[in-house]
Image 1 (cartoon, rainbow, N blue to C red):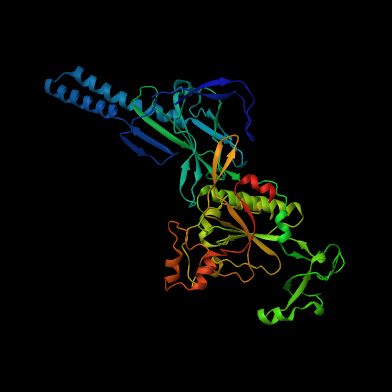
Image 2: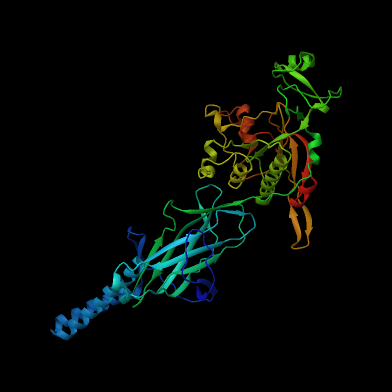
Length: 493
């Protein structure tokens, strides 16, 4: 438990007008904690009754005195038994009235970058619902617990991030503010699920606790911790195909540079393309009309795929992939070509519902949307669907117009030196270009063991065709154009 010390300063909260100084937490251990014997949720105003052994001991003593008074026919013994019963009733009633008279509000930032901390600010005040009689019931020795939790990888479970020790409020006669600093937060969504206050004042016989909802508009107050991004040089882009520049031009074939005889690649025919540029051998082989592209008439651009189903070696490797995805999206945005972000499983699939259900509505597409999405993604186990399921649950990826860059985890581990923390063990990832007509690569991850994912067993299952496995796994190989050992390598990418 922590005791509280007042400190005069302005309130840090937004949208709430403070009239009293902020209260600063000062760590001091104490045993001010109820020993739960019987806990009864009341269901009204979030109230809960906690009865300890001394409460039942008092009732037993009162019954024994009453039984003794019946045997000896002594009125003073009856009076003594009645005193025990009245003390138990008053000890249970006054803490209830104290908690019902306390209201609370919260101030919490909505957006934080990864590996940054924040502060949860709680305001408590007396409502004085009894009017002038409220001074007869002072609020003393109140326990305060703040429940801040991070949403788990399945999108349903939660884990607490604040220390479980409560703080002790010696007196609450006026409005007070309490600051709860958090540790450095990892990428994800954090919820302030409620503030619990409890007391057994004044007789210490029965505990009452109450959970205060800190927001009137929604059930929980949440803060989104975005992944960090790092500047990239874009050296890998020389390996990418490009698209024709359309700056100030009306047709797709119009360019701002002179046509070159240096043949680069082929792409699908579009309205406005010259028939002289049709590549007939590729057209006959693919069954789609394809035209030649030339170096000087193209600008390197790319889309990006983050494959959540790949067998990522550990959480650190996956976080490196998410930071890389955010950094590459910022790189494309800075060059005037915002990449399209693909996910496997797709964003609107059933497997992503638990992670993306609280994605903000009416958000502008672009970097802000990508930040919200990448703050919520997690590794997905290999629980594949069959072709009879909804096609929206499978990845639909086009690599015709633009190259699609993806990240492939490696099984290697290397050691790097960080001056701040010393030696760091890193799990590198490869930056790859998804091949045209990508297919499932049998040998790419055949030797990688991952709990819950067995590629050989999936292939031997009769209910799943090889096409289902391919579509579910997504691209597992490609042309390697770079490698990232840790986040400091992104600058040279």
